[in-house]
Image 1 (cartoon, rainbow, N blue to C red):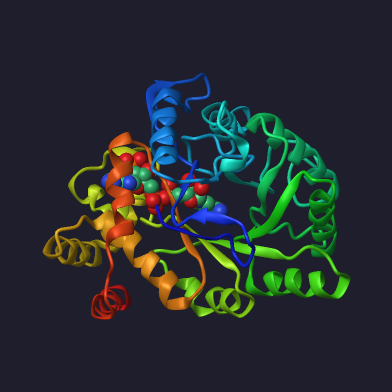
Image 2: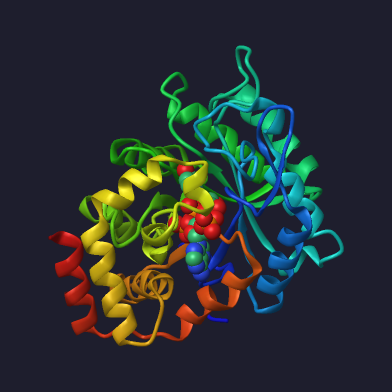
Length: 333
Ligand SMILES: NC(=O)c1ccc[n+]([C@@H]2O[C@H](COP(=O)([O-])OP(=O)(O)OC[C@H]3O[C@@H](n4cnc5c(N)ncnc54)[C@H](OP(=O)(O)O)[C@@H]3O)[C@@H](O)[C@H]2O)c1
């Protein structure tokens, strides 16, 4: 395993992290028509990742493990935290760096979502209970809550650090203006500083290069790159069949058609180098991290045990500047 830093902190994390948005499906559906997670397969995936040196795990208080995030399935809310909690049971806590998030709806009543002091103070305890741990390493605000002043959220997050429930704080999916407000308020009011930005970043989605990457470099923040394979598109699997995630996220098939030419070119390029499309996509992010001189950590979405070794092999692939230039040509066409 290769290791890097959690943003500008001293905490050491693996260069690849395991995410838990989508977990392996069991093929069986519950009364809410949500596919149950195959917890045993997830345990095997977790163990393999852990044994191969991955110490960094990302989840959220609203992930269920199988359905699209923007669909409200309140009964399954927090399922991923519970499953991760079971997988880490018996493992020395200090060998793990665990990240979770708060913001999304966990019920259908006022204050059942958001970034208010009331909601955060409730949800941190719920996350700790489900994960069965007594502190979170990285607590992230999942997306903006326009109804709560940023200073209220930041004061609450700082309080959680002060009372030992959280080690570090980070943001996800905020506009650059909000990110700047978080940073400025920390300095002006002497509050805890966000150390990571969790944003979509892959060869097909490079918007963060326009602004957030620059602010990350300025303040030496870490980037947690989510959907590093563009939800599986960059593996090329959806070109051959609509199997897997595209069966329950139909939007992926439309995106597959939109990006077909680019994906085909990337796959051709990977083949010439004797690597897979998945490995190219992950190696590209790791090279970006080296080039930008900040930690850029791909959050892996692994739904099959057989993916683990293939994906981790990306750590041994060193793309050169010519490769990166060629990939730029493909992605900006
Ligand atoms: N902050 C946020 O708002 C946010 C949003 C989204 C995600 N995230 C984080 O980012 C993590 C990763 O997101 P993601 O799951 O969308 O990542 P991704 O890596 O872009 O997509 C994962 C999917 O790619 C396919 N895949 C992975 N390895 C493969 C391989 N070797 N061969 C073929 N197909 C492969 C699998 O599809 P199949 O299942 O079809 O086999 C898998 O479900 C999440 O778990 C979560 O922690 C955060």
